[in-house]
Image (cartoon, rainbow, N blue to C red):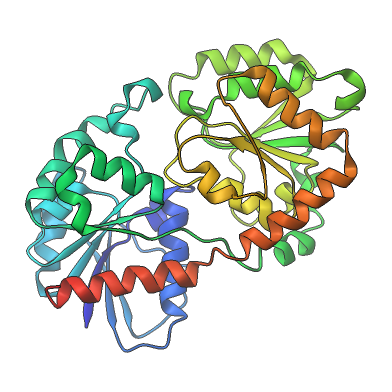
Length: 362
């Protein structure tokens, strides 16, 4: 079969959806099948290994016009995977699977960006076109079907994965910590600086740790600047030298940055999946994360889960790991075992099964 994939995020988006499509393409290329893949993008992702089954088609234009032009380009495929646009799914001339990362656009409490307006307008259009939906977690599927009951029979959970060489990659990059100028000992937080990531409470919790528990550690905040981040900036400034901000960390450096941390804190209010939790667990770093949204689903019993609205709960979760090396080591072991259950090969297999079913009219 010939599948068309919206792959523009591979070259355009450093994290998040970009990571998803890059890992998905790598996992699809590793499969021994005879499908052909036409990859639509404004510019190709040149790091994808050359493979005769995969070809790039450049589609010019800005959003939302790009989606309409891409839909015209998809007409020769058996099915389309729309990974970044419900408008593309709605306009598609062939059977379509749309990836659903989250329903943040419909949750005003999370202060979504202005681009969320487009998602709110176009997801209902995709629903009307008999699109099937690849939801990246059970929590995301539940949110989708609770808001749009007609999607229930067309939604499948396609959990994300983690590179199973993550730990080996961390061990191989011994230069990273010094090159990035990171503290000798630290707790790590990774993510775009936006309201739903709950960084203000995470910072307050770290600053509020007893000095003996903090024991010279710093809180390292890694990730792009986002939106409505003024409160986060004030919290960072107020913490002084206790917080170290790195900005965005490249994919090649991330495994080592996770592995060198004494703990990883991710107290987000709302996540479609929570990939950083999985990545931290993959290298054996103990994780403190939220007990809401998709995060307990990813963490299982391999992380400390806390109420993200309580600074005291986040602080106590951190203290319980930092002050008890045996407990930290236990969570590290459990985390590695948990992360081994989530592979990109499985993500690719489930996604391809959905595309085949769509093409066959099931």
